[in-house]
Length: 274
Image (cartoon, rainbow, N blue to C red):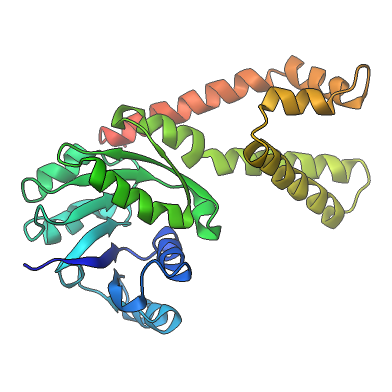
């Protein structure tokens, strides 16, 4: 099977899969005729073809044929069926990038043709607005060249952190689940603003913009969180009073325990436990 070095197949164009597709096209890194996507329903295929100009199909085997990069973006429960379809037709000239949570590279390698390079990534939900972050690791047959290619793909929906595979469960716990932690914090702060008499609309804007601005300071100015917290905290002022309440309530310890619990659950799922 001849492999087209520029062709990419995205198997499972759901929320993250379509975000990746949009990122690759919007930057001009790939043209619509260089990408093929797969879906489960004909109506969805038609919708994607009309919106993005790419070829969309219900056939995973058709999509994989000739693709240099095969991105697996299906749900973990659909993995067995998918690998049963494409496993035997993949070749070592192709690169497989899995963005399914809690599926080890070894499990994929066991179900596909020998020698095929496999990489695993854990992007998070902000990838849908091209502000995500993904942990990336290599399987047994993937080298730096394959890592660089996978990184190139993922950089179109955010940033990338390379880690050994043994740390992917920690990545899942910190950044994969991370948006939910921030959403919970935002929810609590908005409710507090309403309790203090602000309208829901005003307090939502105050909280969301404060979170966004804080993130930009930490990222763009490369500030340490302690540095930023101390910059906002005046002696005897309002912030230190609030921080004292949070520390007395055990918020820091609660986050440590919560993220540890998330990592433990990720390991359970990777081991096939329900």
